Length: 184
Image 1 (spheres, rainbow, N blue to C red):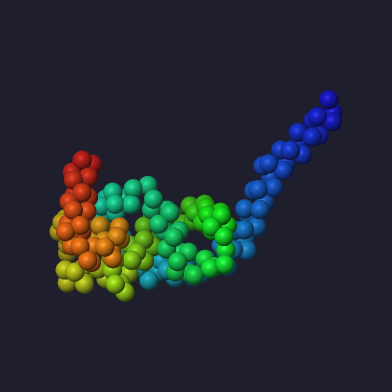
Image 2 (cartoon, rainbow, N blue to C red):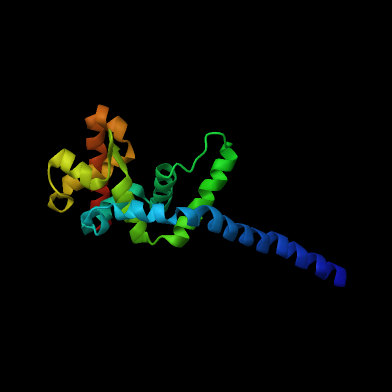
């Protein structure tokens, strides 16, 4: 009886405590050293990207679905060049999962949204919704109408394809607008 209790205690430690300690160590040695750089990625956001109009938030949430935290994580990994070319795909997926969990722990939803709005790739050599707003419509984000906002929100979905096929961008914009109508 006592032996089985000891064995079950050790099994519990190995299954539960050891992964938690490993996660904390990963946080300390891999995520925290990049914290200042992550904060800088957020701070480069324009005021309109930091506190976006409600319609932009709604359309971005429709466009990204439940993946905003994952998209913010990918932007961090890409901007900080965290991926190493020699690593296996299995290691890449494990690392991405760990970074996703750490982003969820350390960044608020607003910080994730701000990071996405400021760093999302929106076309050739362009990042951020404010840049796209000025490049496409020569207006600030707050000056856009609903259709223009939907166009900007659609861009990160497939910017290279949309550059070659504007009709697909129009379809994506219309899809976002139809989903916006359903959410009211």
